[in-house]
Length: 307
Length: 168
Image 1 (cartoon, rainbow over the protein chains, first blue to last red):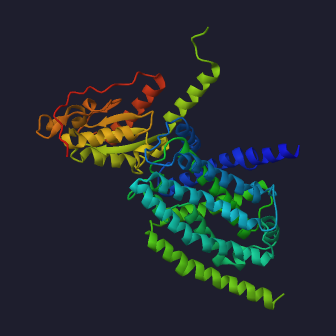
Image 2: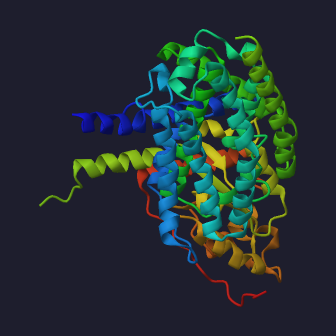
Image 3: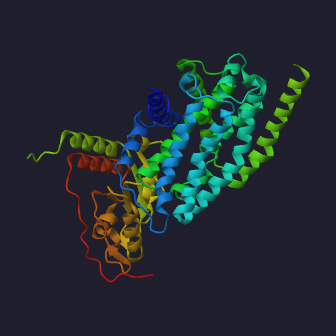
């Protein structure tokens, strides 16, 4: 019985199929909003689903000089990492299926697994475009990961816990976007960098390096990487909105808060142009990390002097 | 016993055809065009015509694409690159030849450096005439390709006749 519950939790609800479908839905909202900002009609509601099915039915070409285990294994690891991370976050406003002390760290590690896999995949396929893309992906990983972690550390410090469900419970009574506005901004921008959305899409800049690290991927592997990305989008939105936007305590608040957050992210996507990779790294380390560190210092002092 | 495929296979085929018709990744290849058709293809992708509402998206990598849009006559130097780009695309793949030159060689027919039309090099599914074709014509060509997909028309074959290629 317990095993059955775990399997259902992992594969059907709330991780697994439900999360993948939700990821497609959020991807559609994102594309539609960007299209509307550009004065276009935009894709139809089933577009990400049709893309996934089409890629599933396509041939998967295996390049000649590669390691086949890595080539076929990495997409599976990327998707598995993203789906496992969903077990620790309050997805759809429900209590997380698994919760333990310090699961915030586990979730952040699992969320960087797809990016690591994309970087390795680009290195493995040995095409010159995918090599450049992989280098940029990993450089960007080192750039955004620390400020993003620090931005999520602020709410954890205030709540006095590393457990996502406890921070979520604390945030329901305290709107942390008001007390920690810098952390919120850095978290949103870090999330955009994690998902390689414009202006941080230098790793997959299609006008310069074809398609970045995934240039040689086709068919099933490409589909799994895309699904991992859209699952990551939902999980990241859930994390940021549960920490900063007054917590998630039901399907209604989940939908409203994540879609408002996605709306602001798509405004930023349409407004800003692509940054060079050195500008990206500079932005995060020179401004993001310093500002968030200053805020954490203020939080610690506040907690120390005003108990 | 029965010649008809099973219900499961029929359903799967329907789903596959539906997905292929609603999600088209295009890639653009210029095999020696004067840039007129290329500008029109770019105009097709602008917000004015917005082909993303039909599910059409331009990709950079031939590995991600389904439809190859070829413009211009095939010059002797571009021939091998065109074949290589075509072979890099995963099955099922389709070719739309855009513009008068890609159909017959156009005004470049008989030039010393021109090998011929696109369908002499790779199999072409749809021809879009015009010099250059308007974006509406290109969208219409893609719609005709979708009709062929739905009807299950036989795939075309190339009619090679070009000889004496230049190796660079």
